[in-house]
Length: 97
Length: 383
Image (cartoon, each protein chain N blue to C red):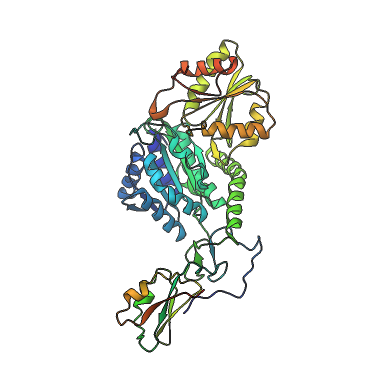
């Protein structure tokens, strides 16, 4: 399952837990602003082997309908998924400003 | 049961009674014996705990964090360079609110290389978000081992107990060891919601951006301040069960009518008290305050003890190069907050294990009575 941000995005002082542990998806900020190149998956080529899913250091790749999907809200553009993809189904493209 | 134990051994007995589920540590002089004794206890079965041999101090505390995140009690111990190597993880543990207990054997830091006792290692970590206590003798070491878990778990804050290297870790004294039944009554098993749980899965030890980070840090600060109350409660419960009383964040000795007071930490306090007795016999009004805790800092308590003094001196075994002793900085902040406008003098000594003698302490009392430099180095005459 693709991790997701919840609809509730604003927390009051009292709602913020004292420890850094909470139900997943809350209290998380989008974090991808420094990405200069983005991985783009060729859905036709992707065979859903899950190698990119396993190697992604940020855990932003999920498998949907047997195809890899990237969460661009958190992908930092490191390119490890492209490097690990044996069938060259991933290309790195420049981020357009 | 009474036994003849070193500070390290007494602390190991306290940890045995606290029943941590895991112990992960890397040996370093003068801490080695506490983990040696604990590994023997695990081997012979008197302590049912997982002893993890790690390859570094960084891993030792990381391991302890993993265990704490799994919801169990964890223990580690280190000293000097080991504490500094571990430093990154100290902030992780406090930010993650993992109530880990660590024993630190106070030792000098390189260079020049030196294995003897001073307090520059732990003092450098005052800002890492850990509770910091300084024991004076072996009995207090054992008792702090038990109380530290009580206080850490009720405040979700890790706890560092400091023992002066060699002077305390390797000195043998008669120590009363409580029985397991009493210890279990004082310290029931650890329970927390801050753990990995298949039935209640959570995002743990996550990042928080500028929008929430400051709230986490504020709550961490509040927990440290709140620890003052918890420490009092721990000592009250402890006295009821074990019959031994402790005096909270500070320990006063003949301060009530004292005009000249020394404020210090750790095992040197005993020497200061002996000197006070000698000078009192000569008719001088002198006293000692031992700061048992540096975090949370006992501002109000200290102000109460020195408010009628004419001058105070802070002998300490550390130096913040380019400024002054860090205990001194903290003490002056407390004096300022208490609107106590009296001279205060700093005496840096004992670095790299250099002995501090009766005569040194007597000399310090003379200097604070007659005036001295603001920051003085014991044994060094500067033109």
